[in-house]
Length: 159
Image 1 (cartoon, rainbow, N blue to C red):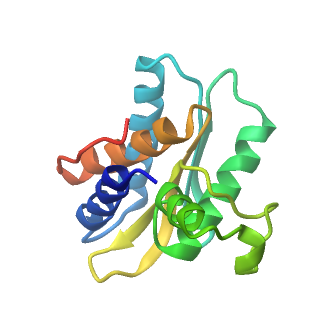
Image 2 (cartoon, rainbow, N blue to C red):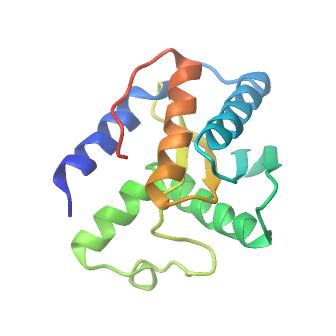
């Protein structure tokens, strides 16, 4: 396991907490992700959930139903753990634990990156910002960069 990447992921999660959340701000995060993906020559599906409900979703040309299914699994992981799906996956791989050993189905959860939890400053996880379509770390970083931009924060990158 790359300890430095794990440190960056933890730093991102500590820095990117919301004082308050509005649907308008979440919509702006989603639109920023689409812009970043276009700039980087990618094609992604973006899904933002609050309290289990989808409050924003958009698919770029070139995405498929598979991207939607991956996004759901990534979001479930981030919302369940309160960590990015990338960090959750890295921790579990390092411990040699499989999803099934945690009582989780591979049909509903994943160890891939791309979902970042929406966490309030109080530490309560209320949802997730999820990207599916590029490499795991790129999906993760687009979500994190877009949240950071919205919050006016600067973060390190895992890419």
